[in-house]
Length: 144
Image (cartoon, rainbow, N blue to C red; front, side, top):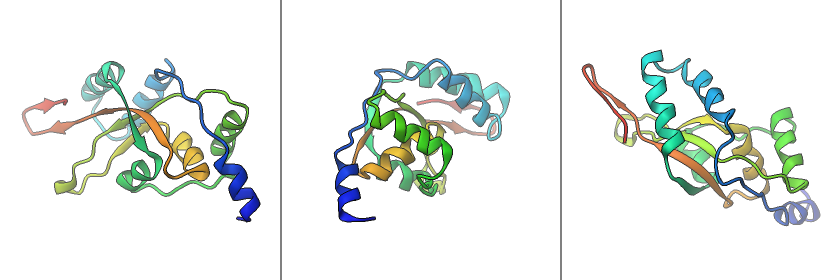
């Protein structure tokens, strides 16, 4: 990337909504249906809806999730970049905490494209998120 383009990108600053959009929770539910039992999903999504919004750096979210940065040519990333350029606020992302000792990465339940769009502008940008913990034993599930 040229120095001029890099400088232009650094001047873009994402605007954020205070709370996730209502449609983010069903989107998270759809994704989580690929990873969890249906009986577990409601509790996790409910916890996300009630969680406090916190801020994490875009680079840390991607590193903890072990997901690659999607290119700006990805149509969803490009769409989010257009929203940023036109000062449209983005929705906070929905996360499930990983577990380092078990090698379980952070799960981006909703907002992967938004994180990638923000990362492409500034990897140190703070991203608002709702982070919940999840543990399942053979007998019990707890959310923290």
